[in-house]
Length: 303
Image 1 (tube, rainbow, N blue to C red):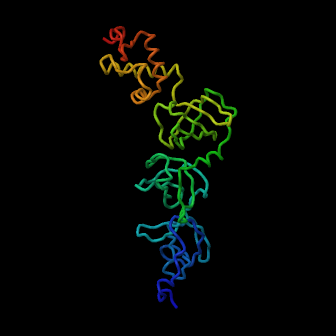
Image 2 (cartoon, rainbow, N blue to C red):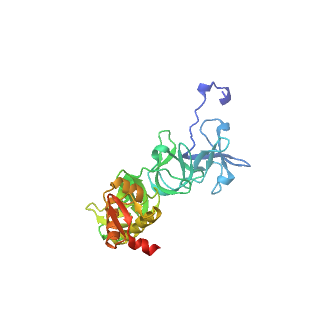
Image 3 (spheres, rainbow, N blue to C red):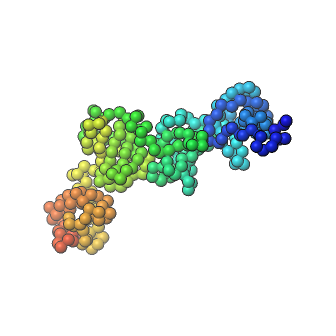
């Protein structure tokens, strides 16, 4: 009995899915390329390996490893450009497309690999490069996820020889309620507390942080803020700029809540008080009834 004469329930089920890497046999060659055995017994189901998707010559009888994907007409198609990483591996991958349901990351295959919304850390944008892991989802398709905490832990090494005050450079790979986690170029895991960030870098961003503490477990605590002496000057300039903008007065002082200070100045309450105290010692500002004012000294110098 021929395949086309079988009842639908008797026909062989298509074995292969898009988004998978398979080892298939070349069963015939044609003008467009090579045809691979789809395993259904029906030559009409054979999978095209177009000449443009061949990275080396192929012959009938060869068994070759290919990446399967859907072409623009939703036909199952093969490419010899397979992912450049293995399942379970992590790598820095480029975001090549974003949709409502997730994103597609470049793993070196013919098409991007899908990352579901649930596997995101933050909201990656096209062109960004993020840490991600290749895995097989429940449907048997390859997928990627930014949930790489366990892999980072296994790939990391203790920072035993690092000194407080030195700098480390790496990429942000996760945020928690407490702060950000960075994986450094030396493979150190670095924690950056929220109060040690003036701005929140995006997940995947490369940053350089100053080491503030070497933990007993070999991890590091670090800061993206300037050292206190320099920060006082920088933060003081921000305060003075706001006072000038508000004609010499503002409803913020060392009695203002930490939440308001962080929202208005993007610094901690402690940093604000240090900068404000520094300005008061210089005779540039003064506090009265919960407000801060420019003094006549600075007003005169500005006129």
